[in-house]
Length: 109
Length: 116
Image (cartoon, rainbow over all chains, first blue to last red; front, side, top):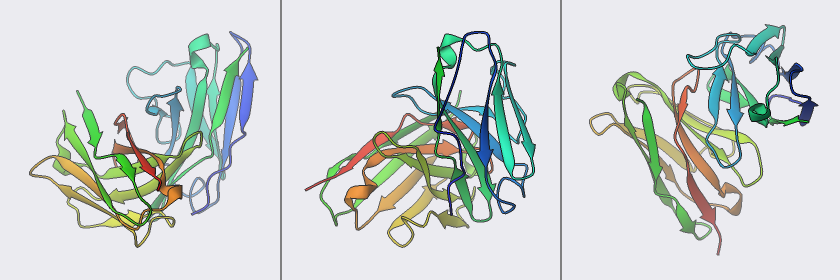
């Protein structure tokens, strides 16, 4: 049950786009469509932003998008806004478990 | 609307036990798998356990296997986490979350501190 690999931090200026990667293996990210992304502000519970690789829950801005290629999934945030500054976690279903990435701190400059 | 409210956290000595509860409302609890996920202070999310909608299947993270037990009472719309042989490294905020493949709603969490 190894964690998925994410960059520790990314940053961007308002209006720019950023991409956060999430690398796993063929037994998790690469093997299933069940990759999710969560946003967490300090002191708050995680919030689902993307599910099943590229789907947005109702109410989530279309500035958030997801994709996957092989064993790596990606979250892209376009038109960065100050309120996007938060920690982001990827997650993947794996047989008999669920894996999380280590988290990426997004700083909006 | 979906609501998940955790309770039962607190300060406990190493080696002791604690049971967490998660009261669910706003959805048909008995038709969804449920998870426990924890977050140590200043750290990332760590998956703890999952239970199927009917309680027939349970899976655990390696760090809690054999010490923690997830269970549910569908008649009470409540999820539980029985934590035994607690260690300092179990100190964390514990979240319950709805769903099996996707954790689509999360509670606000309950803090467990293991300390002598």
